[in-house]
Length: 147
Image (cartoon, rainbow, N blue to C red; front, side):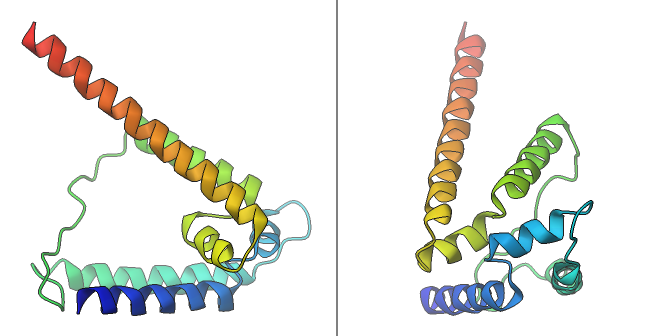
């Protein structure tokens, strides 16, 4: 049941990205071009998403399990640190250069967009580099603790 629900949720999300224009990098870049020919239409999409998110998180905070009975884990930290700010800046720069963020890039990849393929490969490489650096950091910390 969980896999079917995840599939349906993903399909609904993907259709929403297509209908809203979020899977179209030209539309996204038009939204981000504040000094040029700004296209404010995605502001309504973002406002709607924020509204839904606020309600969903408020309801989720009151629960310990999902509607399907799975454990519900909320983010454990509210700390805004250097790593969060650097990651956010890197995300924003990538979004501004490519016109994609991860979800819309996967939708566009499914539609056969070559630019999306390049973005997804770069995204996966970045995720792999992060994991490698985290693994090395943990290994060094464990070695220092054992010494």
